[in-house]
Amino acid sequence: MIPKLTSAEYLRDYTIRLEFADGVVGDVDLRAELWGEVFEPLQDVELFRRFRLDDELNTIVWPSGADMAPEFLHERATQNQVATKARRVTRG
Image (cartoon, rainbow, N blue to C red; front, top):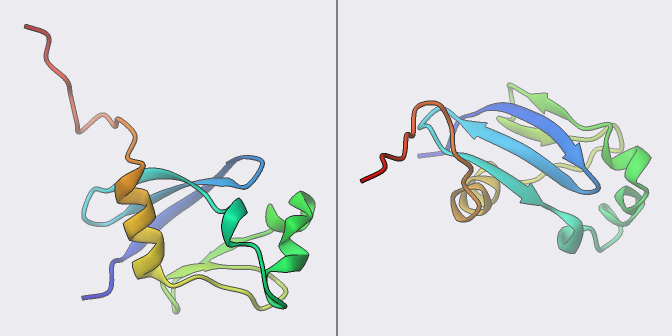
């Protein structure tokens, strides 16, 4: 099943906070992914910041036509999860 991306927020540099319908929320640094003809222009942080969430493709896209697979983004977000209100840490 393709993960449903519900929110994407620019944080800094090449880092975006991604939130998925299954509750995964993670900060993903995409700097290392910006290579090749399609992605190299996004090394300009001002262009990188111009992404938007595309509900039809279920991922983030840039005006240049670049996009990233939602499965890849979900995997990266899972590796870099951040605390959310739904996930509380109890102190013992």
